[in-house]
Image (cartoon, rainbow, N blue to C red; front, side):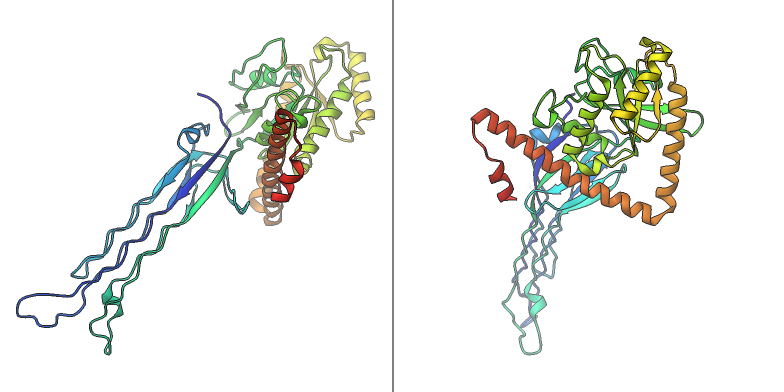
Length: 388
């Protein structure tokens, strides 16, 4: 199945049914009076998160969704049947943004979470509703109102606790294979990972977390180099980022320079995402002597002005991986406890999530404009900002 993490759809709620104009006509009953019934309400459109889905590819082939309209009212005070609601299922982790207003409608982070994205029209009133002591034979009715119409952008951002970040061939896929049951492709050439992968890391009974692996970044990714930087959005829901640094890059480049370039691309993509807690992990230490390992860590700390801890592992032979996973588990459990018990912590987290959603959308749209400029030889970035 093709992995698609963005889609635009149009949703339209059902129209409310019109009210009925009718009078009671029966034998031996003179001047029976009005008996026109109301119409039915139009159906609404809902989006619901489904844990069985993991891509938005279906929305590329079916971009329009319309709920059922309400039926008109009938005589004998019969109310028209209401339109059925339309339930559209999306993957867990989908953000729903109104294209016209740029409003973040919902962030579907939990399975079975549901949100109304288009409200059905209100029913029209039959002439029975307008009768009074001074208007015994009303001929007024009202029409049902139209249902809401919206253009929506769906953004799929994977739900994970830890996100792996780094250059191509830094060993991200090897690490997730080493500590979980995930089996992403691993090879000795760059960009073997083309789509994000998830793996569950288990440390015993009821102690586990989800790790996300995304395609590698290169310098200039914000300008379209490599696979670009749009996959960074799948790290936005994580509790912390794990920045893997190749201890001995195959191209002979400096590990500290590579790490600084990745940090710069992260900042360019989303300043809010760059503020997330980030751990620095040196991988492939099995290729270095113990003295060279210490020298490399000192160089990284000095050149990156890194004040936190720098961990050293070898994902290939699992050296240091157990200690890394144990420390990650402790940090994640601390985050989960704070999120559950501290309202201020939850509020800050939600504000960051909302800020990241808009920064991610803006960065991706700017990237599309740049690609268009490159293909056509024009410069439309100023027009893009003026439109927004």
